[in-house]
Amino acid sequence: MEKKIILVVDDSFVMRLKIEDILNDFPNVDVIQAKDGEEALLMIEKEQPDGMVLDSLMPKLDGYGVMEKLKLTNKHIPVILLTADIQPTTRQKYIDLGVSHVMHKPFSNQDFLKSASTIFQLSTKN
Image (cartoon, rainbow, N blue to C red; front, side):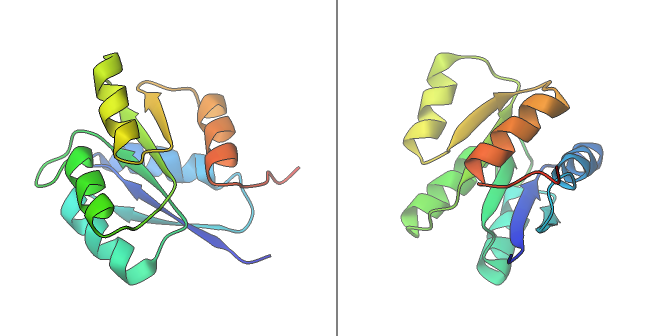
């Protein structure tokens, strides 16, 4: 089975490591990381990821800006958006830009695994 590349975009190094650790529960997944939206767009062009975990609040270019740019380029990547904002309007604006799933911080590892397996179509090691 071919490996899937998942891009994790978050300005928090600790959060990127946490998500990478969770994604390591899936066989055939390579995790790449970006620390902000600008770096994420460069990584998307270079690596052509199969999925992305995207933080909403970041310096330079936030998650909304990344999604706007992706929509303009017609790039369709399954995206799990991470946000602390629980407003329905925030969720809807991201869905309208093409986000596959919105997860609220903090989240459990189990909830993230379940969402990632569905959104990125991954199989667990079991």
